[in-house]
Image (cartoon, rainbow, N blue to C red; front, side, top):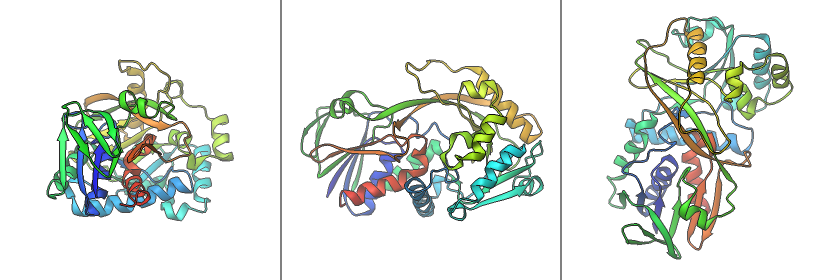
Length: 373
């Protein structure tokens, strides 16, 4: 079978990986020299802890297995089974964590409620103010800025794989056939469009009523911390953002402990991951209303700095870089991804939202199974 994958972000590259692993001939086309979208501008989290029960959690757990398996073949992914700590400061926050522990799928996620001292044993760099933590053993991380490059380098060792950067697919010319902006026509048995947040042009022509929206975020990264932060870190604002924590305890948190004004205005949570070089990736915000701002604003960064320094009990290292990113999210947030046949032999896979890095291996596996690869 011949497969054309359009897009070299993590979702597209995982589709190429699945196809090559199954013995198919793959051409992957990317309009940039390298993917530059949300697949790079994220935490690199394989984030099981907050996923909705049912299909979303099942997808995340399967993806977690696949990430570890692929990481064994491609060490440059930087896969590490580091787990996460959601730090707790108040009784209301602890109540949400206790409710999560009572879920029937808590064991599958690897939940455990830790005291402050136990959390500091997991992450000795956390010397600040908090009373406990919800630990999630199944969370993990990779290096987002280099993961796609590492996967593609591994793919390039197969004679069945071809990467064509700097080309934009402009037209579907027939069943399983597309034409790029160089005028070249690519024939395949299946075309999978994994174009991320690029929802205009050909995508809009093929799926004009696409149930997908774009979401903008802001993040930052520091110089090396100078010590290890073994587990990823979240604050209790993440309870408000992830569906696993919904319920009466979360309602009481919302009523009794409103978010800080800046966090509420920018729909914020703290997530923090240490990179391979020792720096910290810290975020994030969520903006849903179009048109998006073209600039970043400082208030969210100031808020995140204050929260992180409160947990670390020390000043942050120098901020090395700040950025904004945009990802595509199904408007029905209960769906893991939007997968649609848009022409004969042509499928569109988009809209995983903030789950793209986590779930992409399993999303690609599902596509391959459904298409009979």
